[in-house]
Length: 339
Image 1 (spheres, one colour):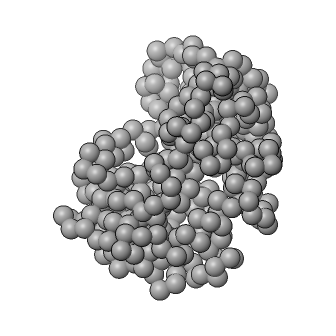
Image 2 (image 1 turned 180 degrees about the vertical axis):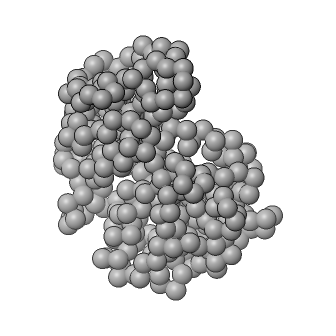
């Protein structure tokens, strides 16, 4: 689709084809090639590709913003590059060099700059993926790997302006066990969440809250976002035990809460019972940025927070973060990379 054919005011968080993508290859035991821009097109992939049988692959989620002054900037891309490299090691894939990762991302964003909506309309979602594209039948690492970056203009993850969402705690499904792959963005981590998410949405909830797989007592994540609670002027979030994704937005929220709001930070386990006593609750991630939680349904009972309104601290964190991302506030931490 051409940019002039898109109604940017009606964007949702869904895929729209753009002009080009970035592609690089790597054979097992060799260095990654430099890669190149190509027209966006379907992939030529063998049915025996390792990624199809064994899910050897990961992805990242990023956003490029068009500021009011016309500049284009991305939020902390070096953090995504680092997380992708760590994920490659965990999934027995050749580690993606940071320089290749960022170069590929920037090239695709530049080449598709006319697809970027204003910050009021949304952003350009950037999707780097790394996967085993070589053929294989046995359970073993692929002989070849592909690194691909494509982009799509998107609207807000949750429809409407910033407003509290409703969530439901599930004990019927788990997101990830300890010592598994929950700490990396492995492609296989996300399809199990589709069913619980669709069930929750059919009942009027935005997403599910997952509990730990061992005791079903402690909160892990909200769908594909990190969980936060404000209790007695402390910011509490589940510690990174290996089953929880180390979110870039998570890290940024913690930094802002500590430096700008002077809150005490506690990264530790937080039980459902404790969370239900919180002054404020919210979740955070690349797609959602920050989403206030206004209601949680747990074991058949609804718990309402802030009378269903946005909490003061949650709103302040959202304004600080989006101010930096949208280019309306000073980027005092050097988080934005201009393209």
